[in-house]
Length: 492
Ligand code: CAA
Figure 1 (tube, helix red, strand yellow):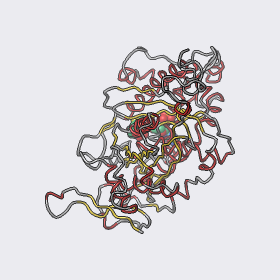
Figure 2 (figure 1 turned 135 degrees about the horizontal axis):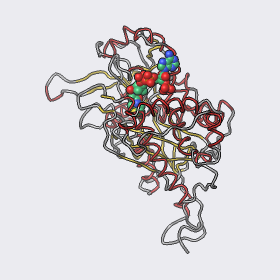
Figure 3 (figure 1 turned 30 degrees about the vertical axis):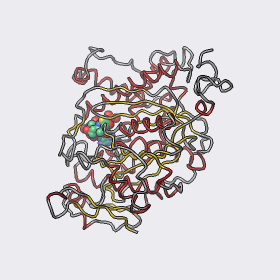
Figure 4 (figure 1 turned 45 degrees about the vertical axis):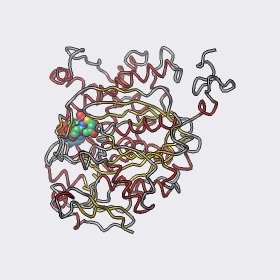
């Protein structure tokens, strides 16, 4: 008998122990048990921003999808935001460092060329849990623009699946400050925050599907930040199109795996997207989620019988580029096609076909992005958190629903994977409340925003007084060998 013939989960027959495989391994589900967030309390209001930059506020509200952009205070950095999210996660779940075997921090806002961000986080947490309390654990800082948190989750999931974890859980923290040049078109896609994710066996929220995670990778310069530069160099339109193409390619590979492994079977007139109940994708800004869904559905539907009904509603044929096998540059340079394609996309997202899927499967994941902004590595996970909370508030029964994730990192790599919501999810999701968890927020003036942006205020002169949080207390010592040394304290 083939090992793959019987067990629906691991393709093993649970009745028959074969070659040392055990039923427990076959049944093991690993995934997200809980998530905690940290969002700095300062924000810029989109109307103030629009006025200062001479942009129509409607462009920010509807064209980009931003109302409040979270900003880090002078005494906050990605490491202390990560530690604050992690502390919340541990306290809420009554976890002690001995319960944690690995802690990864994924970020593209590195503080040091060598010292990993998770070491700063461990240092902060040990102020609360005692020096050396995490010594038994391991972990690294991960970098690949906004996709690295997904690689970190995948790695830690497999660490548990491989039973290397000695009964311990892993924590993956995604933390970033998205900062663009003043006056650039990226400036209205900024934000700051962290999400800490508890990964363990028999998770209460979501179990990852096995053998279907798919990736794609290519050397690209759509968005990058050379060492020492605080803000990125961005090719905006190129990055938008590259995101769509790379996620679609990873999705094609996911589809092939999902069908081959029997995770999902589809009939000739069906799309695999029919079997994905909810979507969570990378969200540099809210509108990008809507665009990603439209691109994916067009790709998935255009060969199906339903497409003729879609075309009827769109009332125009789908345009083709002059050179359909051309490069991204040649497609972007094909202005006639780009114009027609924009027109088609705008009409497509107005159709009842698109809207039904958007409202049912994606809209809830976009709510957090509107009031927080871009979190780079943390964007998709804040989106997933938002999806859970707002679907629950709508009264949707999420149990056994499959969530499809589309993660993208410039430079570039995409990862597509999926998971299934677990029966105990309500126990966690019912207490989620984004506004309460962010806490009381303070709107800053454009003048204050400008000073914060140019790092023109000392970290000792923070705008807000915090408590029960880690803050940055000092950078660098008095001697050269202490240059760049960062000290954090917990304000009780
Ligand atoms: N009312 C309503 N909508 C309006 C409007 C108005 N008065 N004026 C303009 N708009 C709409 C436009 O029609 C457009 O909508 P569609 O997308 O539906 O066409 C939208 O506002 C955006 O306007 P523009 O097309 O003029 O775009 P822009 O010049 O403002 O730039 C951007 C947008 C390219 C995303 C830019 O913000 C940018 O470069 N951002 C950083 C890069 C980025 O986020 N790339 C995303 C993919 S890469 C990635 O995801 C990695 C990462 O995290 C960075």
